[in-house]
Image 1: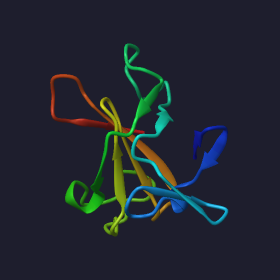
Image 2 (image 1 turned 45 degrees about the vertical axis):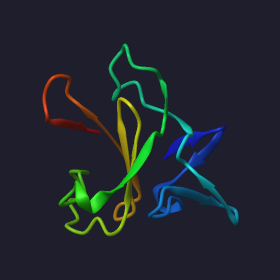
Image 3 (image 1 turned 120 degrees about the vertical axis):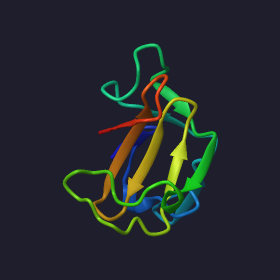
Image 4 (image 1 turned 45 degrees about the horizontal axis):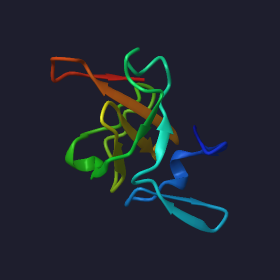
Length: 111
């Protein structure tokens, strides 16, 4: 789960277009500022980061990056992209999976 504006956001509540659906209301996460866990982000990066774009998960992921899941079907899910991190709301295992690029390399670190 990830906390937004004091509310807990679950992977299953984020649709394939990057909208957060809760209690019958729908809110676009594009432009939202999300708190990035300190264990994921680099020290110099802001703890709250703006979602600047969304991309289709299946264009970038072949399977769920959660090592306990590993589902080969990420479906039509979405990846929320900030300037320094990415968030994949994995519906297959209902996990919010944060990813950051290692600086200067193309590898990714998953949590």
